[in-house]
Image (cartoon, rainbow, N blue to C red; front, side, top):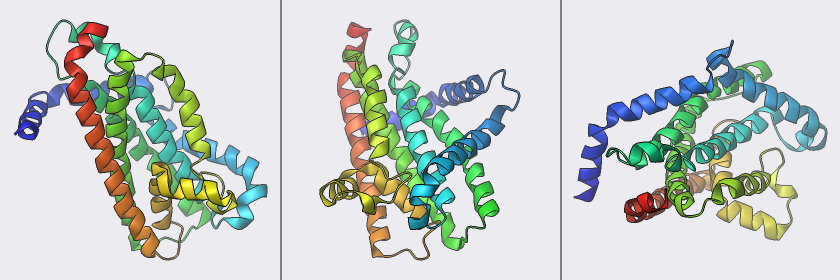
Amino acid sequence: MNIILALRNFFKYRELFFQLVSRDIKLKYRRSILGYFWSVLNPLLTMVVLTIVFSSIFARDIKYFSTYLLIGSLLFSFMSGAVSRAIPSVLGNASLLKKIYVPKYIFTLAAVTSEFVTLLFSLGALIVLIAATRTPITVRFILVLIPIMELYIFSIGLGLFMAQATVFFRDIEHLWGVFSTAWMYLSAIFYPVSILPEWLRSIVTQYNPMYFYITMFRSFTVDTIVDIDGMKLVLRGAVTAGLMLFLGLLTFSRNKNKFILYM
């Protein structure tokens, strides 16, 4: 029953949600000459720099290194950026929340969704790179929608959890940058996971959600086959996304009525 009420409430405020998403996207590229093209250019330029730095070290061990690198960079940048925008989403709208009733979660959801739209634009950079490097793809490329949607759900859950926690512990906003940097280096974005010590490799491959989504995406793009392990990643990614969403919704729902006391 609560889920039904929540969906009705969201439907009631859907126009506000779309306006918030649209506003965030427009503000991001305001007064920019190239505008939305930066969604394609920025990841491509980042990929070029990282390829120059790391290709001499890892390119021999990784097939289609540039594509491999861009996939990891795109997905991690989305998650990191979405959570970074979600963290202050409640506190940043405190003045509005004190005056009128608005579902508090809608600001966090809009923050994550605006980054998700940017990710979809950025996939254009991946298409350009695949064509330029002649990376062979098959019809299974359509399956990349699975890790994209799983990561979106995961990011919503993590964003909700971090947004509500930040209301009570303001230091989270500063700690997230350090934590996300460490997380990035443990997600095998620009190196093969096989170079890690066995104990660390086991932790990364079994417990790092970003490794699930990035490796899943790569398995549908640059790998020649999708094996049983790849399908296990799909299931593991779905379970992880579901659990993170449940945790985010649970903690946000339990604490939302206390927010006004700490704003």
